[in-house]
Length: 258
Image (tube, rainbow, N blue to C red):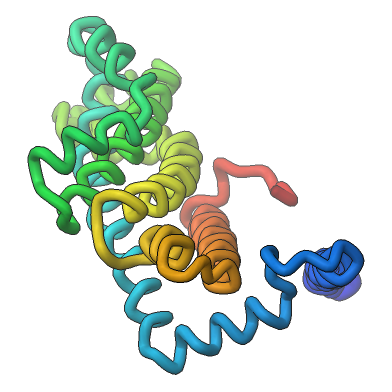
């Protein structure tokens, strides 16, 4: 990337963000609303949360829940998906169950999660796990299924055992598609943790939204939580993009602006 392109990649998003904030402030002043907060009021709300020690704690709690549920989905979804993609008979047996469970919204599981785990972290982690599992599982299945037969045959010709063939041939070849699934799953997990925290736990950014609304209608804090949710979601997406472009992985990707 040339220096000019690199500078544009930084300045154009900043300019768009500044224009959005300016339009937001003008809209609040023009309408004279006393309900929806201005950017300055939201900034003061974030400062208030920081002074009270809630900002770091709520962000930390949300990230820890996402890390736990998403990590569990990684541990189960990738090896299971690669195995099913490698083994057509197993895939045919498991596919009806996967296709039955996959369309069910994770939010529909909230009452079940509360019954099983109570209003505790495990309820939110369980919902994040369910939300993350199927994008990861399906991407790993498709990636392993799409590995060219010549790769597998070459591994067999070199005398590779089944497990080594999976680890050293099938998984690396499927990795680009798996990483696409990981990116999608992380975005879904971040959405679900916010929704789950509104109902199933007593901390986190989702809880901050609903608690600020109910406790005195503090819409400055509601929008502050929304801004934090958006910023952290953006940073998580950029992190996954950066990982996918590491030298060991980027062979499977084209440069995109998304």
